[in-house]
Image 1 (cartoon, rainbow over the protein chains, first blue to last red):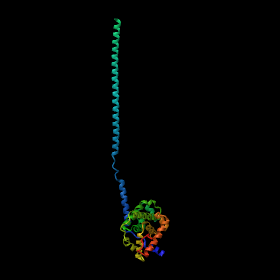
Image 2 (image 1 turned 180 degrees about the vertical axis):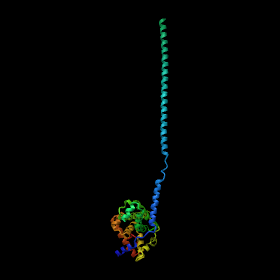
Image 3 (image 1 turned 135 degrees about the vertical axis):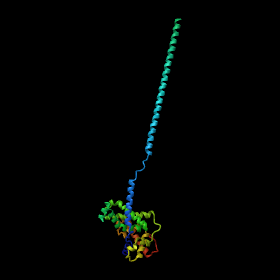
Image 4 (image 1 turned 30 degrees about the horizontal axis):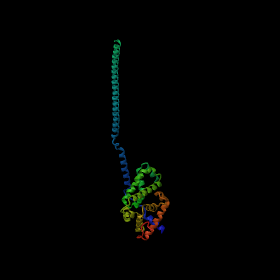
Length: 116
Length: 182
């Protein structure tokens, strides 16, 4: 029975042919696949993405602007400092002048008192 | 065959077509009896040959080619059945007519009995079904079946033993227990 069943199974499961056009259809699919692959390779490259260089340029511009502003502020600060110093110098020289005048008058009074 | 393989590997289209024709019967039959759907089987078989076209450089010999084709079609059919079990199985009669099995096996001694065998094979789960087909359609021994399906040899033997036992049981009592039941 075992051998008989084995033989029956082999007979029942003999391979069968596909339809006549099977091999040609396989070749046609290979051709279609190759054409598709060739098209993918010759398509124009992806659209150039402008966003990145624009973003970079904007970043650089911002850096320059911020730098210029800082420099301007520094220069303003320096000028203000200079003006203060000059103002102080003027004030100082005026004070010295006043001092000199006061001293001279004081000496003149002393001299009159001593001469009287 | 090795000469055709060598030429196909060098891009000879006619040689590749020759390889397809030499192996289409085996590949298609495995796909058909696994998937039980003629259109799906044809599609799967063509996919396998398309894949072969890209893998030719890895095929070392005619024996390797046969092994590779059986392995790929079996694995892909099992995967396909597991992902999407067929809802409407073609009846063995429909498969026989559509596949020309009646014409191919015109000298069948007992066509009804053989049709019943095919129907019982069709009812088996994917892995045992593949084992039975590789054994009785492709005439592989258990060691080669184990290599083809990446299955332990004992599992192959177990599937064969249980498959045959179930077939004997069902053939003696067609209305009794389904496959695998004790």
